Image 1 (cartoon, rainbow, N blue to C red):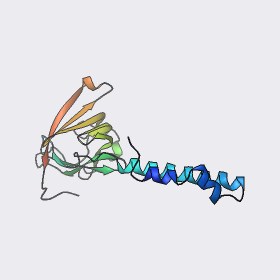
Image 2: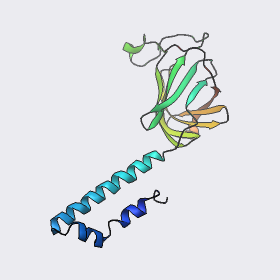
Image 3: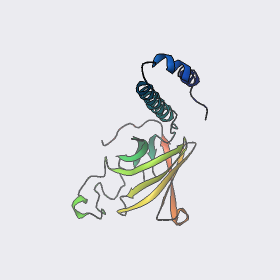
Image 4: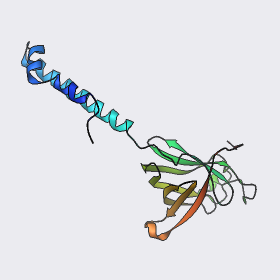
Amino acid sequence: MSPPPGFAAFLAAFQPGVLGKVYAAGRGQLRWGMKRVALFAAVFSMSAAVAQAPQSHLVGDWREPGGSVIRIAPCGEDVCARLVQISATAPSKLDGHNPDASKRKDPLCGMQIGTGFHVTDPDHANDGRLYDPKTGKTYHGEMTREGDTMHLRGYVGIKAFGRTEDWTHISELKSTCV
C-alpha cells in the first residue's frame, strides 16, 4: 500500500535540517516537536486506513425463503441484520423459541438477528453471529453476495457442518414493521 498523496512532501518538510532551524532553542523542544510529528503521522495514517475500508454490496433489504425481509446495514465497523418485515405466513410474530423465557413474548419485528459481520471485501462478510428465531439457536455466520442473491451460511464450530440459505435482494421495500 503506497502512502497517501502529499504524505511524502509532509515528511520531507521535517528533515533534521529544517527541524534544527525551527527548534534551535533547545534539545528538549526538538524531542517534543518530533513527538508531535509522530503523533500526527499516526493519526493521519489511521484515518487513511479507515477511509479505505471496503464498501459493502451486502447492505440493503433481502427476502428470505419464508418471505420475511431482513435489512443488512452498517453497525459500527461491521454489518448487522434486522428483521424489518414479517411474512404473513410466519408461524408467529413473537420470539417464542428464545432460550431466555423472559424474551419469548418479544416481537420479531425489529429484532436484530445478525451481529458482528466483518466485511472482508464488498461481497463478503464473516465472523458474524446469527440468531434463528425459528429455533431459538445462535450460530456463527458468513455472508456472500452473488448478483441479487445473498448466500447466508450458519454453522456451529466448523463451516463444513452448517447450512446455507439463499436470500433475494429487494430493490424497493413498500412497507416495514419498524
